Image 1: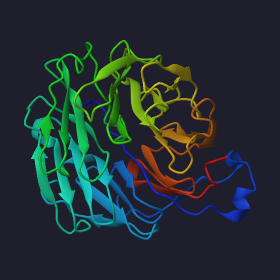
Image 2: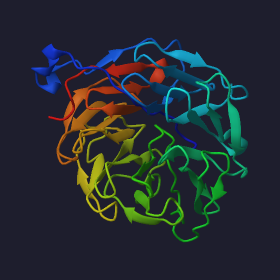
Image 3: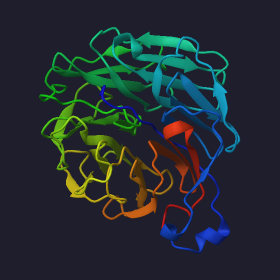
Image 4: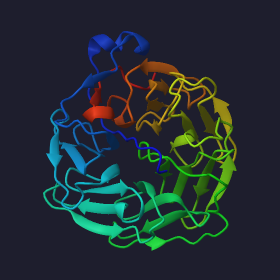
Length: 353
């Protein structure tokens, strides 16, 4: 959605033994790391406890291979673009997506740790606006964007991004009046397993989550009971641990501490949703499952960050620092990124208790 920009996170760090003996809410959750930039960071891909990639405004891509130091990588031709999402498969291979109107939406790939980049595709629709990208594996992926002529835009690849085929599900991708997606954290689109995908929407009177069971070829939408009905309000993120259990979060990015339910959970793959109060209360731009801890989710946004260890039924606050996105490789390894080049490494107790 053109009115907003934010980020995404991912990776981990070993928890301190002394902290592990305290309740999570009483511990320091995040430790700042030097990013070397002041731009807004909105994309994050955590590969392991030592390898992570981040992306943001002015064509910025950052990478760490030791879990501590971050290096800026130049993407030729992307200097004026907002790289709002990034997917990574190892220390060498990553795919970055820029968001913007028409040709400002692009996808780039590196296979040599960012030394060189290849432009894979430029959005061919002048009215298009890509919001997020996700991959099931190194070959199969999906990119998703705001409605054009009343339908959300979806393209899929089965060759690692070399080619992208437009999906033409006329009814399944039909948008409501004023409905769009928020390119806030790279997580308004998510995938699980080998073929399930979901994307979340806002802006319209009813926020929705769309689900595909066949690798992005066909879609079905379900209403989600959270506040919407305004251009800055609705769902900003969706995360599923498997084909059935998932969380959607959102709020209003113009009213960071807006009261009321800011999330919902599903146990049937997104067909139905139950409202939940994610903590801290307020605007949450990202929610992600934590690998290695099946019942753990972490949510975050400008209101701070929180976690659930019971598959989203109840939540506890982690920290009040405003961030755009988070990502994890395990219950003890993860990062968050945000405004003014903010990079944080998770240093709290394991997120599985």
